[in-house]
Image (cartoon, rainbow, N blue to C red; front, top):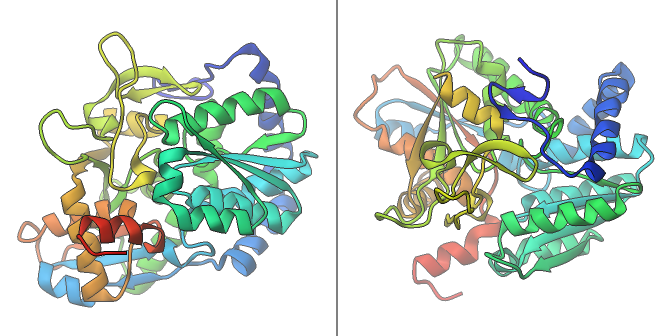
Length: 391
């Protein structure tokens, strides 16, 4: 496979001025990241600060209702409440060893911004976070958390005022400040080597889940489900299972309102090849190549592109992709909350919703594992508004 590519997707499509920091990062990955001393320090942070390993939880009540065994990998129990911290502490540690002074990030749901600000505070780095103005309003609690952690949060007013526009602004800032700043990309997107770096940092999820499942059940799960926006939580849990051909892998995309011609975020199943934010992937775009607006009730899925490795795994048939709409995700959010006492992030609720749709289609001995990528505190305002409950 061509370096930096997954099949025909990936690569490095950036202005010449951004090539030096990408080369610098690539050299740091081979010269610092892979060294035993670095990995030992990272493992210690993951254990003592992040709280790894996270739990593997059997959902007794929902399993009884569904007629098959349903499990959760509990990334909501990681420090800061989501899987994002696995990536940011790794990149922050690498950036500090590279001599950088500031972490730059973009965020949609706010969890990556919180995780980046947390890692920066831990390691004594400055932090600057770009966030779409629309997402700033939808995720006020996370904005406050970032600011308390010492980060500067910059609302982006241009275009759709969501994650796509925040990434555009972050890239422009990185061009200006690349000497002192590391761009801490939050998902398996962007120019090479970011998709591979983020995947390798998030693969701790799948390694743990695989070992835990074997320990608890003596076998591997039949199916592994995860929501996919940019795709870091999904790639994190999928990657260690890719070689296990008996394990079906399913990515769950956001279908928006689910009505004909509605805006959505189903980039793998309904997109077409193109280049965005420095890499080739599957995009929501017009026949002329203009990026279309995306939508999801879950801010972290509201992105018109997807990690290039996901598109490759879909094309090769290793990962299947399905769509879940806002209404289904909201129902799954309520079901997990009421029946298991676990409040999920709306992003994760999309994956759970697909699991609930499998009722009546699977044998009783079937084992299904869902990656619960984060907790739902950040989404309470959205949920209460959708349910018509006054805040």
